[in-house]
Image (tube, rainbow, N blue to C red; front, side):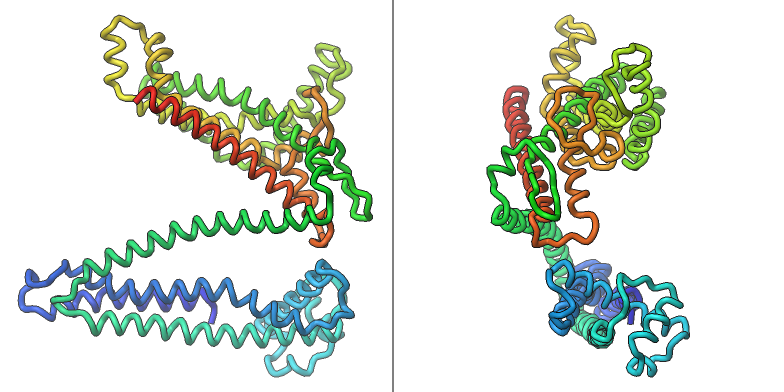
Length: 487
């Protein structure tokens, strides 16, 4: 049974539990006022115990089962089929494709379930080709055997999952329903359950962050076991080669990242901040109701669209101004992909991040501070400059930090607008690249995660994480300093 159908059954049991639990509580007393809690709490108690444990178990099972099955089948693959972990990953991909393709063939009526065990590798390859399943290589007998094992183990796991989840759901339903009475403290139980859910959600967020950091950290440690740390942090050349002899200095990538981000912030911060001041202090309600949503539309545009805009519009426009034969005739820009191209477009993308947050922060400044300034004879511009902006400064710093973090982590605009050249240059019209772009390029394709050329992506990510964390700490220091001053 598929997880969606199983979830639908649990939901139906949950709804029934709510109705029946409420009715049982009301029927257990001669006067509703004698109930300890409101009738809805009794229904929610039964629904909660029928739904939450079963759905949590289902979610964990759906995540863990493929990992367990893959680990079991991986041990059955002969060593002769692979030499490295990357090749083993490719073989496992084919095993999973064959297993999925057999299920597809059965669903389409091409194969009968009883015919699976008698198939040979040639027949399976032809059958899967007929149902549109693409394979990375020819199906060998070993891969077919592993795929059959994978499919059988997965089907067994699916049936066990169905039985266990339904048993847990029914057990929770019966326990809560049979224990429902007028004296049951249903409200306390429901509120305790909600508190546990909230704590669990918070722990999931924390553990997810911890997992991300640890995954980066372990792979980074493995990378530095294969490549010297001093050459990585202080090297000025980025020239990866999967054949050996790579030079993996991060300085050109880090410089490109910071350079493009600075140009983007130089565009986004003044425009976004001035737009926020206008919308919050000068614009009428009619103008604000039109202008603010139009600004926020920029935040909803996919970054790939910004990248295409940089590649097809902004780049050629800059070449027409600063390139050979351009309007200025200075010959500074040789191609459309450059730091300036990516920085300008990224700055446009960041405007709503700065303007919307700054607008909300400025509006949160108490009106009494403005009135006091006006009462002392200050003009509107003086009030904004000397009262409103200092009071809103901590929040504005947070908005700028958010924009900076967004700029540092951007990829598509850089790939399409800035080029792929890793170089140290002060010329904003040169093509450069960033850390995020190289993370993508190093992990694209069938990379072997035992080589420094692939593991360097995790070191780049860890470095980017540390840089962003440092920006957050700096911003927090500024926010606390000025908050104490203006509160």
